[in-house]
Image 1 (cartoon, helix red, strand yellow):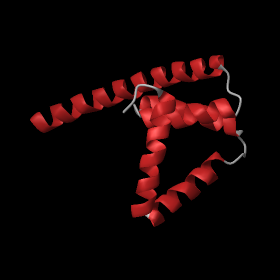
Image 2 (cartoon, rainbow, N blue to C red):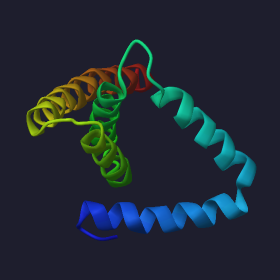
Image 3 (cartoon, rainbow, N blue to C red):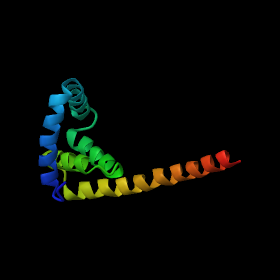
Image 4 (cartoon, rainbow, N blue to C red):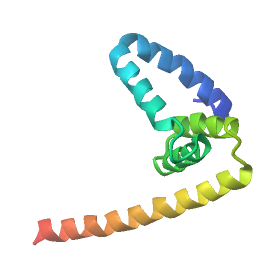
Length: 113
């Protein structure tokens, strides 16, 4: 996979086309889910894309970052908004890891008892 996010989006678009050919029903369902989730509602599309960027960062998904940053730019997101989104993703990526680390330690203790 490329190091350039526009290249990543381009490469994945071709790969996703191939996936749609072998899993048409599944991919059609995913497309409908994406359309419903990103539609304007209580949150505007730009805000929804910023949320998706944060989740993409926390999930460590290069493709998610590529597609959702591209969409956020298209919806008018600023560098500052993306920077704050990144800050929240870093904060939340660390927090859940800390909580689940404590749970894993408790599970170890329980299984070892």
